[in-house]
Length: 329
Image (tube, one colour):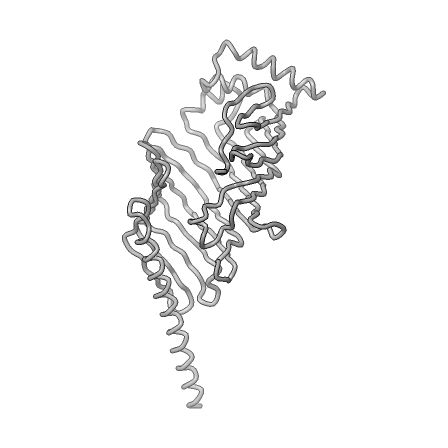
């Protein structure tokens, strides 16, 4: 029986050594990576790994990230990443309430009762992303400018598409989005409630490079977006959209998206109530939309095509201005 004890002790020592080497490697690598970045773009107070013997629990405190191109900064009291010792390519991330997002002179506080993400990468040297799924509950976004919005839940996912290189399926579902109280009377004037029941997105996105450990250097950008389904349910207003957008030779969005609207009659008074359209233009806009709807044979439904060409966008007969830049040529 003594030999069984020695085997158990040897196995325990070996496993403890494996955990210690792994934990030290993770802590050292993450700390070195943070220090290697420009000081004004990323900072952290501490990096620690716990969880012996079965997990690698990485905790980064006072983490702050700043965009090198935009006046945008994000900070959080801490960020945690967990992995089982025998499956380090499957990660679970958690973020706390009280995150701060600063854009120019406006600071947003992001609160939630739960914000977690499930990340899986391929167990190879490139650590290519396989899928990421995030789920948040009881979201609340508060601005120092005096407004706030909230949502019951947000589910987002990005999964590798095995049928093509650098192609991913993007999913998003937002439930019970409550707009700021200051908008309630303006929305009511257009016949809309303060709560948006659902926002849903299902799309396939092709990128210029893979999402892997070298993504920060390669900076993958969208080259093609297949919009399989976009849905918005807001009171009696229903929106559904499908289409395809690609990056043209100059990197601007190009393509067509078909938009189907039920309850389109609410749009003119809504735009007027929000101050986006002058009151004297409401009847003209209503007449234009009514004529367009009658062409479809169903006056209650309106179908418009969002067209992006040569760096410009147009919704039906209405010019919208410059098209967004998807990628750099």
